[in-house]
Image 1 (cartoon, rainbow, N blue to C red):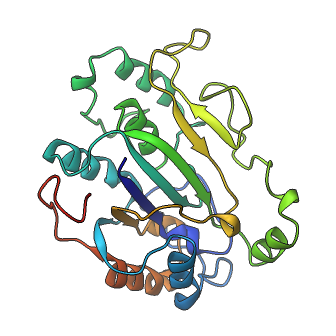
Image 2: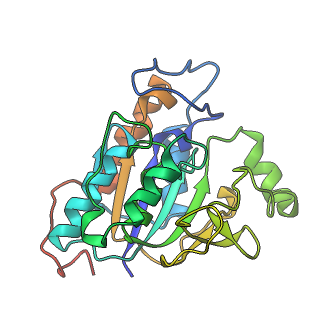
Image 3: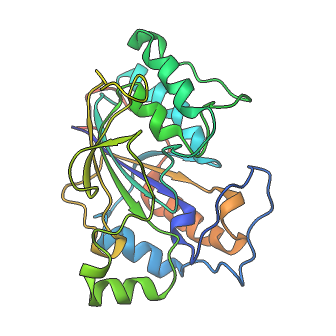
Length: 262
C-alpha cells in the first residue's frame, strides 16, 4: 500500500481556529505564533522519517488536494487504496458540516466510476474541511492516521511526561455516523447509506495518535502540503517555504509503477 504524508501548515501553529472562509484574513501571529523553522523540520525528520525530497503536491487550500489525488489515481501514479497520515489541526472529515452526510450518501448510491466528480458552491460540496471524507467515498483510502496539531507549547512536554493523560482522549467529538465499534484510537471509518443501517462500503482503519508520540513506521511515497491561509499567520510562511524547498518535488506526474512511487 502506498503511503501519503498530508501536511497542513496549521499543524505548525500554536493554537487553532475553526469555521473560517477561504478569504478570511490571516491569523494574528502574536495570538497564534508559528513554530520555528528548525522545530518544524525536526518534526518531519524525527517523527515522519523525511530525509530527502519526495514527489508531491503543494496547494493553497487543503480541499484542492482532492482533484490532485484524482489526477494521480486516474494517471496510475497512486493506486487505491493508499494510506494517508493527515498531519493537521483539523480532521477534514466534515463531521459537523451541514449537507455533507446527505451529499456523501448520494455519492454512495452511484457506481464507483461516477463518484469522482466534485461539486463546488453548494452545501455539502467537496471542500477544505471534508475532502478526506470524499476520498474515502471514492474508496481511495485504505488507512487514515490523523496526527492532530495546532496545539499549544505546553502540549508536547505534558504529553511526553504523562502520555496516559493524552492517549484515549477524543478531541474530535466524532460520533456514530462515521465510526463503529471498538476503541476510538483504532476505529474503522465507514459511511452509512442512512442513519440506521450498516454500510456496504469498505471500512477504513483510523488512528488518532497524540503528535508527540507519532512515529511513521515506514517511508512515505508522496508528500502533500497546504498553506491554509485563513488558518495560519503570515509568519508561518517561512515554515511552508522550508518544507516545500526541502522535501517536495513538484515535478509530477511520475510514470506509474516507477520509482519513487514503489
